[in-house]
Length: 323
Image (tube, rainbow, N blue to C red; front, side):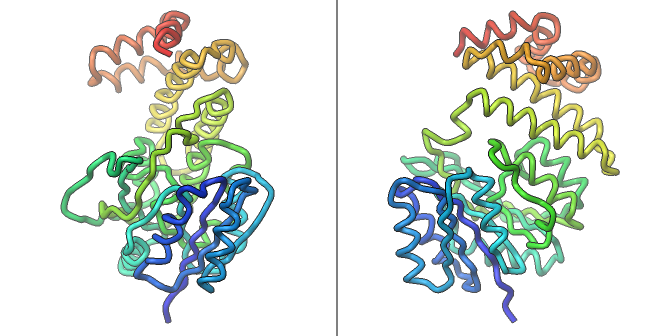
């Protein structure tokens, strides 16, 4: 008996890219799919495109809902999903024809709860970032995978280049109304997994839009980013994973990131709020150990670290001028 995969596609005003996305899913070599298109209150023709495709293929289900953001759309799709496995595709991206066949085979052959593939960045001109190499498969337990998640490189926080056992989402939802929602969710799924697999096979094409969420840094972005990192930090510290030192280093690195972007968007007053005062105090308290760990970094980064610790206003002034 072939197991069903549920694929959730959150959609909001992407009529320019939606057909490419849906077609890439319909062209999957693994046919036993449940394709859930979640129209999150689009004001363009995205909703109509979804309805047209639903008439063409009985594997497609469409949800039309009021706009609630990416997390809310994903959660609506998860609630409707009935497959043993579940995956996500963002509606401006697209996938390789064999992506889900490859990931499912890895899951079944290695008895893992999550399978992860590599991805390729693309833009309007085509491939943005070339990745080549012999295809490999690596197995990790939850601790190893979360440790790699801190660097967000080989194993990334993104929801979409992964195939999950659907039961991992029991009791787990994407945080409503938050940007950087993957940082607040992916580690929770990893913590529930017995084992994970990663392949450097490129199955996902990540389209870099000029107006994407990740390029729209504003006050909400910085606040949500801080919140997601802190929630993740606290959960990992409370766990029995033994990753406190790694979690400390990760949080300290992101604290510099918050203040840098405050300065770039000229929101320096945000640094005076209680939440960010606490973050800076945490940095100062833990900086001696951080300095030792960062000793291999280039001289420029070492100088900026020292400046951040000893003279925060000047550090922010430098990035304010850079804009």
